[in-house]
Length: 359
Image 1 (cartoon, rainbow, N blue to C red):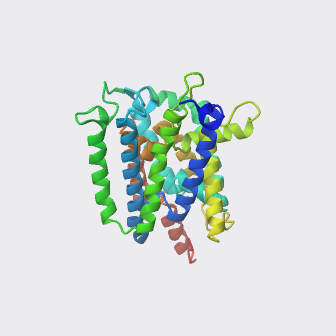
Image 2 (cartoon, rainbow, N blue to C red):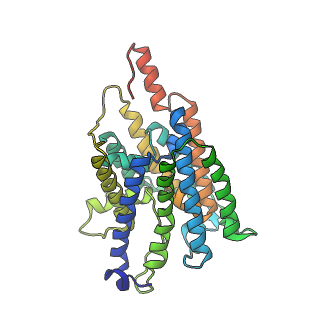
């Protein structure tokens, strides 16, 4: 379907506006629900179960929506990098572990930090800038040799780059995954309203795929099929910010800007906007290291908790499933060591100094 017929714009221009719209929705919903995979893994006991339920219901809706798009023939992801038959297993595993460790150090995944930046959190904004800079360096700059070297170690998946290639197809395996996740939702302590918010966040993933892969499909001005993601969006936004006179904005630029705008609007209306900076009790180095690890790890793994974890896993991509598993493993490993866990480390430091720690 030609974008000119729908918006009177080129597909590339329309994709920026659609990305911004999805970003605004994500920013509002994530700000209200506290949507973050790190909270589901390493949050406080009282919030962890609720966060797991919200994240699980988001993935359920993403799975079902994407399966419907693929099964109906509206969406075709053959040839997409997530469906590459040569799986860069070392890069994905190493990248996922680094990203998981990084989000524990920074006390938030990339999506959560983007949302917090919109609410006035200067710590999150600083980490987000480091995240984007390192991601761009790994894609096109000084750190690119790391990506290419680790990416050279691949495993041939043959025709099984997606679980949809297994007997039963996309509908069966999406249903299996959704059933397991619904069990997590049922056991969670998430409030019904938060579950609704999580479900709406999950719907943004198939909407992203359908918008770029079907609605804006144009043989004369093709754009890649993509969905909501933060690693590529951060790198593209940084590059566009410093060279906007030479390059055009992308879907990712619109999406990231939309998240910041949506979370800003939501926090202002809820009277929760507050400028927060670094303090003496805050371990600045760990925050910055966390942002750097997430930037490098997100590129190596092929995405973050949103790009690989939500939108990617929803396609049943083996690469995305491995990336999400590696991210979760990295976070659990970091959580087990107090020196990697920013909050536990700060509490220990404060206790040894005779101070009272305030999160």
